[in-house]
Image 1: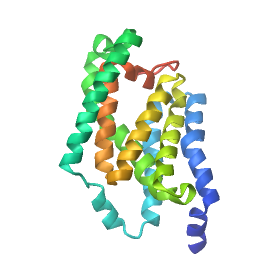
Image 2 (image 1 turned 60 degrees about the vertical axis):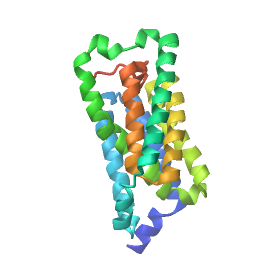
Image 3 (image 1 turned 45 degrees about the vertical axis):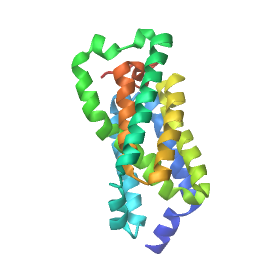
Image 4 (image 1 turned 180 degrees about the horizontal axis):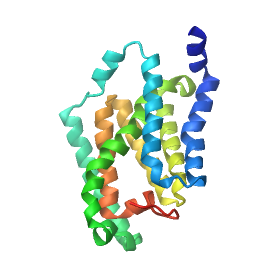
Length: 222
């Protein structure tokens, strides 16, 4: 058992693990055309990360309490930032991607409420566990300090979105990944950063530019 944990915590294993999770699996999804299985695959990856996290963490109960760390003042600040960013995203879509503006409302309005309800739970939350809580805990030995963790969390978050075969998804994911990782660095709250991610994700889909996260050059079925 000691040998198992030693192997599990070796930096070489962590590097291989990170490459598989952030690069190899998205490549397999793309080349094997597993696009309609993205959410189940994400949940399986998240389950792996939860398992590793639980096996390694000796102060699990205390860590679980931190999941719900949330400050009302910080939450209001995040909401105000999101409102400002939503205006920018709307203007960006209106002027540069007008054909995508309110594309869901115009084509499949009946699925909009499903996205608004399910995306934060089944996409934003697992992603933030993987790229914030797990990433900061698991890879601190590789990246040494929190600032580096923020940068590389954002980069790897962006890399996973290359499978959508367009430049919009990785660029917005890099910006969002850096924002979410920085929020987590400051407040160490999985709930807070998941709420933030959910707000931005729902905004992208509501406005229409979220098409690049399920369409783009890939044939996705909603």
